[in-house]
Length: 166
Image (cartoon, rainbow, N blue to C red; front, side, top):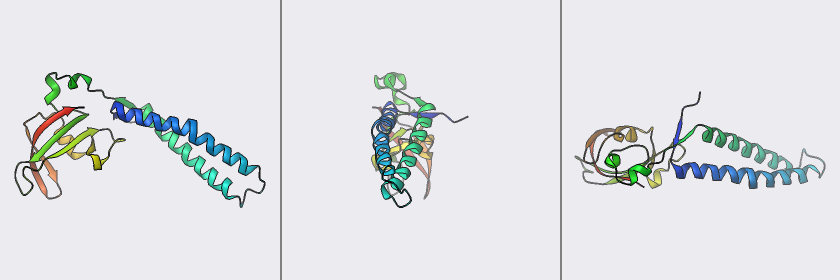
């Protein structure tokens, strides 16, 4: 059995949008090209046919992958936490967390991350997977807590400065 695939509502929508794009636009377009190329005769040296078949396999593989990810997706919506209930200061999946090291050369340097599903990771914008070491260390902590995390330079203590659910 596949492990659950936690995902934010926005991430789920992106995957569905990509799947529909592949099914409704990309795949039919490639099928037309392959059909046209096949009707031209000799397929062994027909670049359009060979490339089209290869592209069709890639699209079909991606469709199967996205279907599988959606099948096991568990959409986590933090609407209740956005409205400011008691858990709004505690870190769970979907939280945007700002933290800073307590000691060392980078003390006070703030970093902001958002804890998302494995299909949504984008380090350039601060999206980290819920199974990453930093997320595992932060989950269930609260605003103002100090948490020890393991970094490449050794253990570091960080203070949680802000917790938001966007």
